[in-house]
Image 1: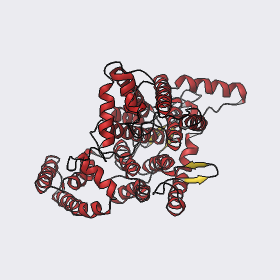
Image 2: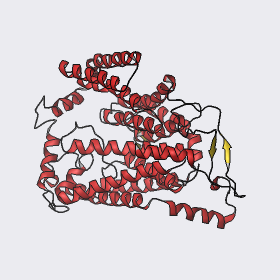
Image 3: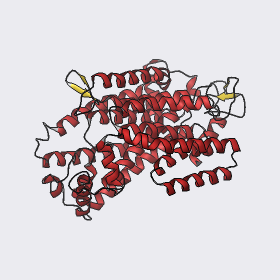
Image 4: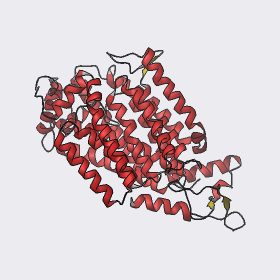
Length: 469
């Protein structure tokens, strides 16, 4: 919250001078509604000098790009490169121990996707933020259309998750995450958007929930949850109050607690007490209680619509169904692999759990287990440290950016990466149900690696242009 307050304060106070030395001011639109990004106490916004002094000639363009490269966040770049390197080393070890020819198998394909992702990263770095904002709704429409086509013509083992584009299979849901972030950032920074109006709040949720429903229909519940996870941080960064966030989140608590009557009663009491502390109006309290009861009533209906394997995963996680040779097998072997690594690990290419194929999905969702077994506590600690630096620098870039659209894009990207990391690591050590979410920069997966590098390029783009509106 401190970073968000500092960022919003800079939005109101930032001012530079034009070529004549006087402050450069532009008139703001006649709105000024609360909860809007970039809202100031005055009717003016101030633009930096770069907005008016356009480069001319090759030398000027060269100077401009040198200036932007100096602005590039070096710790962010270093953390990304080290995570990619560690991921490639671990993936090579996992593929080699699985008996594959690593250069011709999954590892070789990952290198191909890495090259494509690097091209996408560079493109995302150099594209104008204003152009991205202009194309946001178009890209969102393309993403939704691709998800609809996926349900009609998609391919996959029992599910419809991939589109065949010539010799390449691509997962549109991964690229749709980027489109949703761009569309939400544009909508939330529009001068006509007011988060205090319920209709605008519903529109913002619709932008995320439409692709979420399409992805859940595939079915791909893990990826579908990502679309919901990026919504709330972006709304909070855009100015939605904590009380409003609590009202939105409380039905989720009631949904989870609905399977136990005592737990549901406790949640409802907690909601009422919290709203009284927040001094909510009686009408707001009544509306929130109705929403919570509706969520609790909908839980059994949605449970019956889950696929059997999804229900079994949740029951196994909750300890309601023990199946050490079935659904619990992956998590058990994962914890054995991590625990057997000790302090320093068994060494690369010497992991017994992976070498003897006790660990399923060792090169995809459970690759962190390979790090734990072969590099030990030291390797896992370094990995977590790098992820921490990566996420921290994303937050700093978002708080530093003067362009509201750019700042929200970084927050959306940060939310996606943070959710993937949290769920994947929790899943690997048995703290969360198996959701099928890959670990960024490390798990095998072409579409996810491509989308991840494009998102890294967007963050790098904002870091280079942090002082531009």
